[in-house]
Length: 300
Image (cartoon, rainbow, N blue to C red):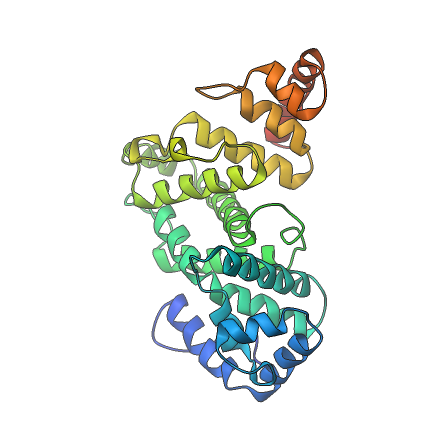
């Protein structure tokens, strides 16, 4: 496993190189031995083997990746999330085993990295698709190894995507600010109608917010292109970031998100759900708004 972090050189872009590196990794007997060792000591071994259609003693990186493919069955989704969290927990540790776990996660998240790259490429200049794709892959790897994702509520893949997207957006914004007013002025010429990638991102925000208890589930959460840039999506994204950083508690986030909606949850009902009074709930919301503003304020 000496070449885990050294991409195989090919003539293609970042995603072609990742696929070429992945093929080499899957053929590496030491990588397969490491993964088999994980599964032997892991209560998920039987379920992973069943999903991968392979005996537990023959599991390697490719078989683990196969268990992370999207499926519709509810029980399977729970198992996929459990496997993802196990990999994220391993990735947050030290050594070659942690790097291998993070590399498997990155391979599983390549579709998300492609979506991030497509959504951030602009027709007025700036970084290319391949360059932003590289930024997205690096962000996924760094966030996967951060140890922040596996303990959070909601689906780990969605949380990982949101954190990586936020990191890429911040890096790109810092670059554009560094390059001055000309590029910023050019950025204002971008289309005002949300494209499919922005709609996909907005849906991911809504899904993560629903999983965290910030957004009610149901047919009313369907998102159209015209809604992808609305203030509700932006607010939910900010609240999710504040939850992740610890600036807000879940109850704080709910106090804001449930109230700032086209159909606000009445304070009395929200307070009853939280086991408190309407007045205390309103005071919590007021304090939470102040903390959210402080969290969004750029550091001096």
